[in-house]
Amino acid sequence: MMRFASLGSGSQGNALVVEAAGTRILLDCGFSAQEAALRLARIGLEPADLDAVVVTHEHDDHASGVAQLARRHGLPVHLTAGTLAALGERWLAEVAVTLIPEYQPFAIGALEISPFPVPHDAGEPAQFVFSDGMRRLGMLTDTGCATPHIAAMLSGLDALVLECNHDTELLAHGAYPAPLKRRIAGRFGHLDNGAAARLLASLDTSRLRHVIAAHLSRHNNTPQLARAALAGALGCEDGWIGVASQEEGFGWREI
Image (tube, rainbow, N blue to C red; front, side, top):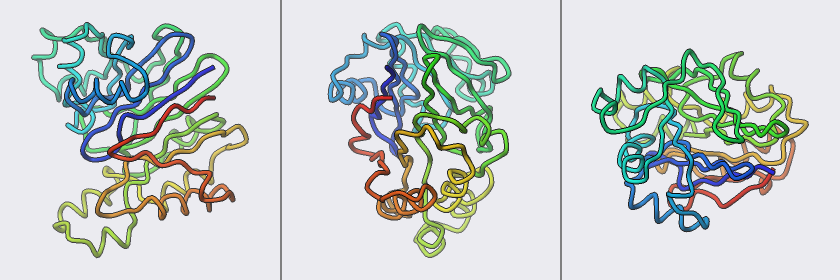
């Protein structure tokens, strides 16, 4: 059995726990070590229960708490060379770092981890598919657009956490400054609901047991709009689609 849970998802902080056969990995930590511990407690874990931290990219909402958490609890950190360079050389002295070479698959305990590149305005961003050898969980946030390689990586999953950052109309008519709107909506920004739905519709979804909309903007999206977009792509009821919130994330899901 694999299971996964979110500690929170959005521009104020992101973290996801993936577990299989006693191996527990934290994907990103955009919260302080203290806040991460509080959020872990909500799902019945402590930082000492983790085996490693894997980092998608250097932006604060994904990586601001990683070094503090890793130092405090002796956790190894896996990330790309570009992400490490963007975070700064101070990491080499403070954290046990393992580089992910050229998006090659690697293993941590019982989990097989397959990284893949995404278009995002970061040093060397990666997203991941996690597997225990039988089941596969895909994670895709912080990408401005979908690519054929992304679609290939996310086909045939058992569960998918998928970015639905914004509704295009809400973003276009919202209060954000024009340069920020262009960044968010650009091909190195974030997926909107429609783009996420089109990607989902293009995948082999025959095994999917969970689809979670993630990284929703507080100002430019709503859970209802994200659910409706993804449900339309799958031809399912809106209520079947989960949503990861900034405050609560979501509780354990099993696959």
